[in-house]
Amino acid sequence: MRPRARRVLLAVAAWLALASLPTGAAAQDLTAKNLTAQAELRNPSAVHAIVVGVDRYAGLPPLRGAVADARDIEASLRRLGVTDVAALYDEAADRDSVLKRVFDLSARVGRGDLVILSIAGHGALEPELVKGSEPDGKDAVFLLSGFSPSGPGTRQRIIDKEFNHLIKIFESRGARVVFVADSCFGGGLARSVDPRGGDVVYRSVPAYAVTDDELKPVSSAADAYASEVDFTRSIFLAAVDKSSRAPEIRSPDGEGFRGALSYAFARALEGAADADGDGVVTVDELFSYVRQAAYQLSDQRQTIVSASPPTLKAASEPVVELSRGVTVLGPPGPARVAPAQDRVTTTQDRVVTAEAAPGAPALSSQRPVRLAALDGLPEAFDGVAPREARFEVVTPRQSPELVWDRKTGDVIAAGDVVAREIAREDLPGVVDRTAAVRALKAMSARALQDVALSPDSRTHRAGAVVEAVVGDLSGRSLVLFDIAGDGALTLLYPREAGEAQAVDKAQFRLPIRVRAPFGADQLVAVTGDAPMQALAETLRRLDGRRAPAQALRAVAQNMRPDMRIGSIGVFTAP
Image (tube, rainbow, N blue to C red):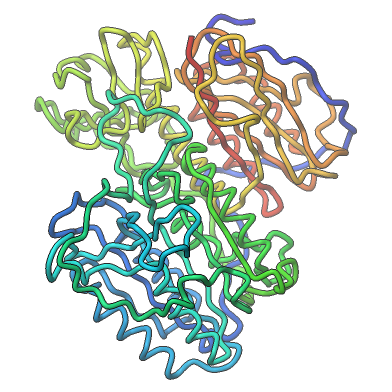
């Protein structure tokens, strides 16, 4: 085992026997675009939507990505040709306005129409209004911008039972409903959060007691007892269950933060959930895609909850039907490389760039990685030059993506220690890894490969054995590689030149024993209908090197419409 090159790797306990396929695809330049299908709805006039996003609250901590979630879903719908979209953001999303939009829409929907109702913002749990209606005695509540727990502000919330009532109204008109709730309600986490990484924002608030309650629910006692079995064609997606919390994640293809559920749902609407490419996104395809995408985007912290009526034939019931026109799309474009005179040397908000080799594309991300020293001293990075990805030096209070604790050498991202014992000169590799993983997640969300970690996604200790599981594989070819916390690359499969890539089973399982050095390894699975010999050979030549940028380029250059990408983190500690 090469020192530091294998990182998690952790010992491979066994390899599965794989069958062979003929050689395949030629590489493309990263700046060339890939032909892929762009979707439009076959009947956009039959689709209606109400999207709600709240970041700003009168008396609660603000959120950073709920409005962006709602805008993203709105934009996806409008690109698909939907014109009947009511969008309510921040203060405009008061209770009266939300209910008015719902009742107005219910008066004009027709039989067979689709209604998309999405909400993103803070959630909470309150003692149930109808005794005995909830097993845990708690109602889930969506909080609006003007909410306060006492007096007039108590009206600015919507109880989950009220949504049952509203959805029933749409169903009574013969409409179908997709309800998306990107909030959470408290509870536990898949992994503990390292506080050195800065604030992690959740869409839930601490418990409160409502006094002088002025809310008059539109729902009845019967609505309080309703569950998915009481609906006919409505389906439900929630960010987490009532005992879990979901963090806001960094947007993989833009500035700022997002909710993983909303981001995944917007991509699903655009056709990413159409697994068999038949132009129809079924209930099963939607649920499967959104669960897997949110799982990967949240670094396995989040498990989506979905529900549909038992009478619904989820395998064939369409959510949306798409028409497809071929257009020129591709992976995110190459980053702009700033000239030397653009370099900023002030003590804060410094943007540092690397000079790219002539003709060599930079990392496929426009924005720099935000990097902070735990002690807040920007001079900690004096003399650190980037390799490929730009980085921006900020303070720990300016939402850094990476925080370097120079006393211990730990590098923390989103509450996880991703690399340990990192010296100053090793930081560019960690920055490149961060930018590469970010870009891979954005590509994956549009061409998603199932991949999971078993038995769970907790931080695993030395000596533990976990399995990486790549699913939905029968007859497809597989290339599997690892990007370690410091950027070191390891090709996991196929290990030898000429080794078979095709998988003759539904799953590929890679047992892993955790050993030093510890941190985070990003396992990336690329699958395709035909072999990916050029990709495998490029990654083989990079094996053992700190080369995340080159690995990303190799994936992008060899990407075909039939290929899928999955990406998960393995988090380890002594």
